[in-house]
Length: 280
Length: 355
Image (cartoon, rainbow over all chains, first blue to last red; front, top):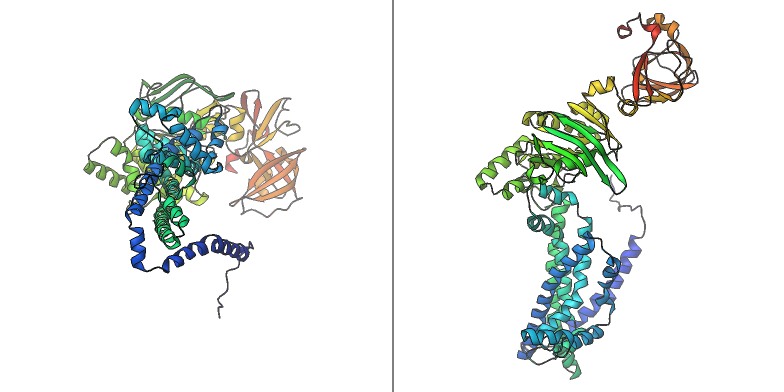
């Protein structure tokens, strides 16, 4: 008779570490998010819909999504270039440059917001240049919001793409070169597919972060209703009026949006893992 | 000569990878670049492919100096050490890649690719991704991809290094067969002498950035030109001194003596087969026995040195500590850069091969 036996692990610690993981995820992530859903469940679907479709709320979503998306696209392009330079070339000050990448993470976001605002008003160094030369205002416009979000999101892309570029087999590029591919073709046919999963992961993280970013944006945005008012600011202003149900309703939509982005990301990651892992 | 290297030199920082190397390779030959790791053989191959640029000297392919011709225009197929397959492309797309870049019509691409897939025996696997293939199959894809543009010269960098021992033997024969069927001039790099001897028509032995010897495997084995070759090809014992052996003059100081296992015979005193040789033999003591899969390698202490020979498993069992007679047929004596074969003078009237 064969007894069903639990698989014996040689290296101990699964029970303990898995327990800690669940506990942590529960207290820090799942319970707070569930409470958000439960709070919202207290209001009727009609009220919920009415709240989240108010013109001012809708336009704040619009501002948040469009600026976060634009910023994530810029981050994706610039992040790949920065990662490429950091991985492939040797130059003086490389270590310093590598360290500076993470500064947006370390800096209090309000500090970033204030300094960016100073720079980009029509009296600031950069803002004046753009105002005089092209007639473009940066601060207190959606462009300004995008600039702040680009600043906040760039480390996500650089840090996800960098290790993949480092690990890439240079032989693959040489193989494509021997087969007659030019530099551009090699980049789009060979290198881009290799870094695409990491790039998309960095992109979606910076997009998701951009959706929720508050500190650095409120200063540079100007917060004009229907124009530069972001969704997190809407939530905050509802809270200041003690309208908790509206605040949570608006927040729930943001939660769902973030969740969808991360879901798409994890789908793309698992698909590419299948191709490289031999299970496609 | 199809490929000619003239006085090629190349350095990396303060390390000389190639030091004034010249050789030629005939059309249609399968040639091995053999040497220990770090000898510069891969650098040599990469320079032929245009993946490295030599510091000095000329490279000629088919009579044309290609020093300034980029690799992709040298009509070369290159098989990389770890195959360097495109992970996000199927087998079909990997092989078709070069053809697509050359803007070959789609129908013709399909024909060529399917023909190559058939040739390398991967029919039905064209939709697989590289990660779904075994090491041997990946190598076949890399081989087919290198051949897709109908190159005139095929270069292979350590083609069997990443494959496990059993499949490697199979693949060696496959590759040799495949190359002779396609009829393409080929050069492959290896550090494994068995591989070079078994597969190649000609072997070039490279050591420390210099060409030691070029020739047919058997010729190199029988007539090593330099001490390095004598030691590198075939297993052998290297001795600093060789004195007191019957049938040999004393070998002077700062010469080295190289003795291959097949130059040595060991037998028991009561063995009638070796009756005639006993006068030319030395007494020795069996010190070590190693099972080598198809024979025993026995080491004996004779006149203060250790000699090795292979012993058939069909012969009488022997034990460590046994007293045996040991006869040396011949030795290589290497003095500075010269190698001489010394034969046992006591055996000149005996036909050793008939024993």
